[in-house]
Length: 224
Image (cartoon, rainbow, N blue to C red):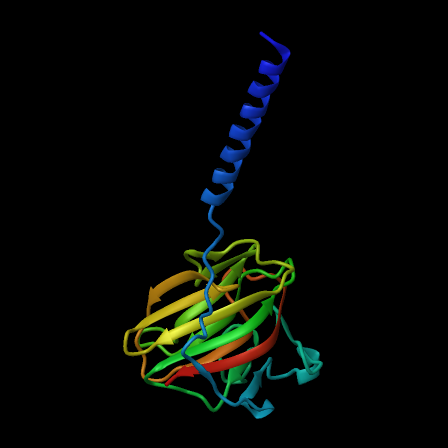
């Protein structure tokens, strides 16, 4: 075969391979992201809306810090509960005050960060349920974010900032969780007459000795 014919065959093969790679790249779809806040309006938040709950025998500065941007919350598995009469596990949480709700569609938004080693802990919850205290909790176990201690919401959550959006449709009894704009969970609610949002660290089963989460840019939104 003539040298120029071989050259043309090589060129043709390269074109075919390049085309196949291009089609393959287009076929591998990127995760679908969206803006969960479309159609929602953010409510006004003041520092008084951020109510700190911490071990009752500890000063706030020993379990919580806020530098004007990042809220850092931590607790020990050996700590006391948040109230002397309480029999619940140790926690350092922010209870969002002033926006309890019993109807409508509400949303929590914030950027969270969980340091490696923190495990067996709830970092966010929608309080209020008919048979349980909450209608949704997000737990961290060994670097995985889970719906309670059950299905996986997001893996490899340690040591990185992630954007969390939780949408609660009360009448529809549905909750939807987004991580970095991607829908990760869609589950039924658990009833309840009144709800509010909480975030921080609240010890659960198999908790680590030290638990910490960090938060910034917290918003509460409502669909009108």
